[in-house]
Image 1: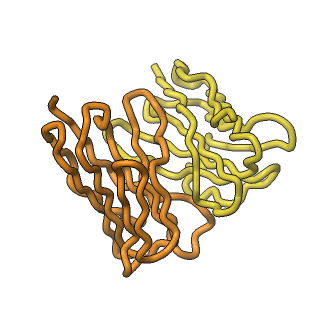
Image 2: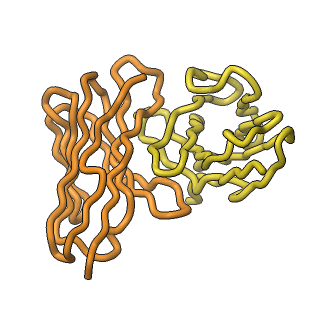
Length: 114
Length: 112
């Protein structure tokens, strides 16, 4: 049973470009969470989605960041007009729904903004 | 925002020693999870705790969900070099939608 898949593993963007990060949850999981991790820090929650719905986006910056989890295909975290402060590791987790908080993480996407 | 206080921040131990780390908060949690993260990788789930007072083992690892629901500890017995990594506690607050709050991690170094 494949785990949570994320791609790309590394992404380099110049300031002002767009970054798209993809996450495929574990088979049978319909809940997806995105977290951001800065060096030497714990993970910080960004957004929680179920298929086609955003459940909680309280950790998402109000501008430039968006997330979706369509009926078909992976979840996408999109960062528009990236700035150097967006450089971080972005992790996706998935859960089966019951119990909701048993979350399994992917390997992450390391975003570097030049 | 809500805080989880994880300690110690780092540990340097000899192979074979036992290790203990803990997380505390002023808030009540429904769930406590312990993860291990190695460089360049995502966190790997070690133990999940769902009930106050619950004590759960996974091999040489043992974790407990505090009775007050505001704390948890993780013990590693007879440490080995491959235990090296950063250990994170994470909790789901009572009444939250499902997002986890993470501690800042305990960096474990094991000397052979």
